[in-house]
Length: 501
View 1 (tube, rainbow, N blue to C red):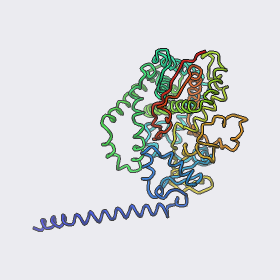
View 2 (cartoon, rainbow, N blue to C red):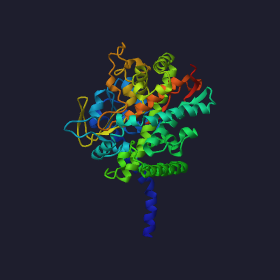
View 3 (cartoon, rainbow, N blue to C red):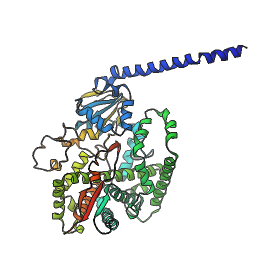
View 4 (spheres, helix red, strand yellow):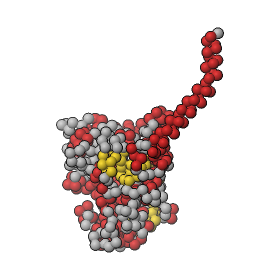
């Protein structure tokens, strides 16, 4: 009887307990928001109150693929200046000096560490050169430095050139030897992934040959749009099991297949014992001290970072040249006047074409391969950034899109003007050119920048030499894209015509 009475009373009290719990929960959320806006150590920094109150504002725009543009609007139109609070514990910077202060070498001080929440959401596994701690990163970087040096890459120029020529051959075969419309987003990806596959795994992905994506490559692009969601749930780890159940089983199976292919290709490269010197040969030396996990995760990181971003830049410069016919004409004439045949186009010779290089540099500014930023965490230290104290456990970043499009940094920032990078051009004397750091700065800057320069300069020169190009109407607004760290790029339809001499 007593037990029955207790059960009856418990059931009767359930709505009261539920209501009380709800009220307490709401009060906790409100008090947290009030604290974040008015009391938090970052409350002195400007920014929208919704961003300061909760991480939800940040994640909402991240998942929608609009975060870099919204942050740009905050810096620009709300006149918050060179630093904006974009989350309760995060600051975004656009001043050129912020690059070195956040990411650069710091005499007698440890580097501001990479934010583990952000980097744990990247596809590279634990132990990758991307995710490694300071000591381990230094070891891996030293091992790989020769393979990515300009001298070593000149030894690989024949590989890049062979795929550039095959790029031309396969396009011509696809078009039946005549002109026609092609999606250059796909073709540029075919080229860069085949090059990186050869230089890292010892064999290409056969994208150019098959005119299609290898399953491992295809999943990278299919996963771009969920990147914002995967990053967001890292702020609330208890959501992970729920989100995992929402990911389609087919996508999960393809991810497992991607891992299997990556392991297979990495094992194949290990099995090659012909003494070749490529990007990763130093990792395979018996005395390298590199673990199997470090090797596997690092080669996967190299493929993604070294392929997609370079292809994005090539698509971006092509689009902006086609939208500016006068600049396309100048770049084309520079290439065609400099070389009498494709065979004369080498990396050394292409580096003597100032306008082409200016076009590629301007494309890196107006359409950076990564529109977002890479956050660092101040950890236990109070840091001084731009002469202002930043409290411990704060995320700090330079947001690429906002920095490269800031009128404080560049004259007419939303226009494609390669001339700003040429010596002797007037009207751009006040540009803060050091703000453009698409490959980052400091000890963790992009190790593959020399390879990226070789690929983009060689292929772009050959494309301009061999083809006349015209933008198709369907791609007139191609640059209106979503950014989920990587861009969700639509087709870039271009009408190609073999050059008539």
